[in-house]
Length: 279
Image 1 (cartoon, one colour):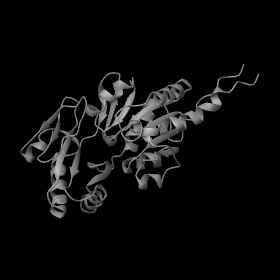
Image 2 (spheres, rainbow, N blue to C red):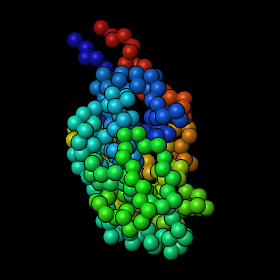
Image 3 (cartoon, one colour):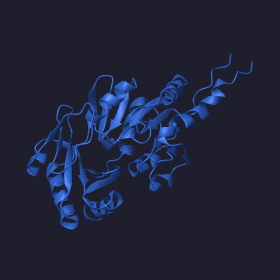
Image 4 (tube, rainbow, N blue to C red):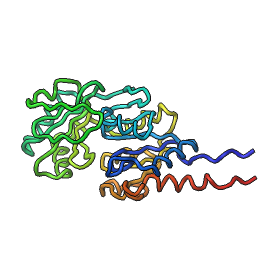
């Protein structure tokens, strides 16, 4: 008896914002259905996001996601089904304060926010940092910048009043790139991480836990922080709305996140699986 054909990739790794999540902050029914069909055909789906787990919970709940999620640029492995962290990578607080000061010595004052390591701790937002909507995340504004370093942290977000995201990323890398990893994760979202940390390191942990491989992974993303994940995965897909630096290293480019680009690719791979089996 012939076996039912299986999805050609073991693991589907998707970024959230600008990739799986549309501009209206929702995941389309088409994309949800395509992911469900791929999982039914033998694939596993892992969300890989720069958001910390505290800021990811509600989005995962909305799409019924209960598996492992790589959060915090690879620094947190989060079990959505249990609402618990499996592992987390700390950023040394003294080092974080030091590198922020070194960047400010070159660029001038920065607005700073600190992402906590533990699920129970709030996101701390320093003076002048605009507070974006963060569903399911507790946010605490602090007026004394020294308080940003009170609790264990996973990463730091920095903003500059005049420099573009690319300019700030380049400036920070030149000054502190030997001390921390500097990534540009989205509009007004330049981040400082533990040295060597990336979405690829977190995804590798998730893949090992799921018994899947890099070669058997298809990855979707839209920003420069997805470059290490693209280098790790067997096949990489950039969204049409992606940053040029990510498009340059992608194996293919799909439609934009508002045009269901993830679904477009998954449906292409699913189509042969629906063909009648030859007796």
